[in-house]
Image 1 (tube, rainbow over the protein chains, first blue to last red):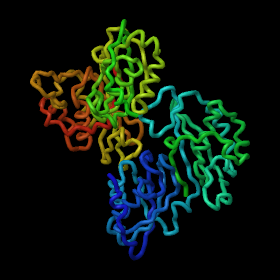
Image 2: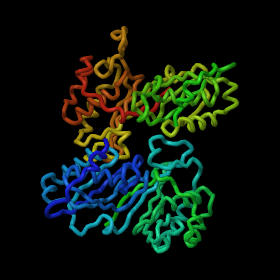
Image 3: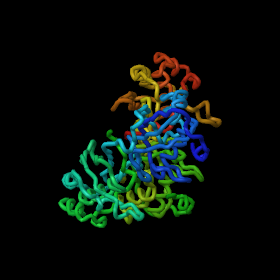
Image 4: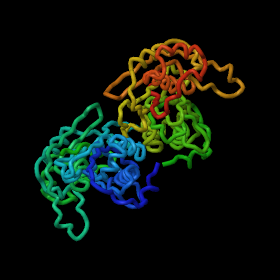
Length: 270
Length: 270
């Protein structure tokens, strides 16, 4: 079902005292133009906002922990917004979650709904974000994972990819792995980020999971890192070059970025 | 991509000596009108036939082990057909599989390609078929399994469902669990089938797998059995009634059939 019909409805601002609410949201991003709301195309924020406004009966402004790109998924996206105390009492937290899932499902699923202190922001209160990237490394593709994993039929050395990934731990300027924002402030935007954890696991034969946790990420950072690690795992790049690519602060030093459909915003820490 | 443009191309029959070929095929059935070829709608057999004819350059008639319904998936569907020896030698088995995957993927994936003896038939040589039905039994849905699992938020007793399923083992008239074929021979078609194995497993919390193996299945049999077992697991039906439902030979005695998207043709034994 589409919520477009409601999205353009002008709703009054929330009346009286406000309550801050936190949602944990999972979504299959395949059919969406990313998280951030945009006019005339389906987005996660657009659908959630339209659903919330429909259930609460007043206008809502949502804040997300991570702006996932077009085609990227989430298991643990976190969203915060203000509801009017009166509307929330009338609806109830449980019915709010159910109503949202009826309106936004089955692609978007609200996993948790909580009332939080008024100073909580899904974006600014977050201490770190963890992304997971899924790769199917088998000669034959799997039709059931085609939306959620990057299929790489040729051999990959996980040892090379692990060694190369370890070089990212700590605080670095990630200019080599990020799409620099456009606009007049282009040169002044900092692309320094702190990577807290990075590693590969192989829960079953031919299924490779890469997870990376950082204070925050710049645009296309995980996909660019995964693309470069895979080039090293495939033997097209030398794993020892990770630090020199990082230090070059030159995007052309990195390999091609990995496709969006293997990427998932896994968990946000507060 | 669509193969419709090729599907209507008239191709010559295969020339000279023939070779029988066996494929093992996995597919996401979500966007197909079932296995069996039908005019003007996408079907698994239609896509595979068009792909094979394109690669081999002659007309092909395929036989499948199981006619999966609209929206039903397969991991181990088996297909057989005759190729001209000359065409197959020119293309090669490996390139045949790759070509098919390029033409029919990513929804349809050919997992194995083999040359088999001329008397092999994917349908008539099969000793048994095994289906798997996947249920997500958690309060909150999972957007990544929405195409492949039936989501049931309320509690289910797997013990009741296992006990009721055990009653199906052996040879029975499955009229209560099958959609009887239409047409003049309606009353004369036998719906007697031999169930070899049936059982539930729970590989992780809230994920329920039902597997059933039988010599063959009649139309909608697995979905009807699963619908009835789930009604028993939910407490809407008594698990002890399975045999009396079976013996009634009356379709109205069974519960509503389970939705197609949880069902997968898992394996065919020869």
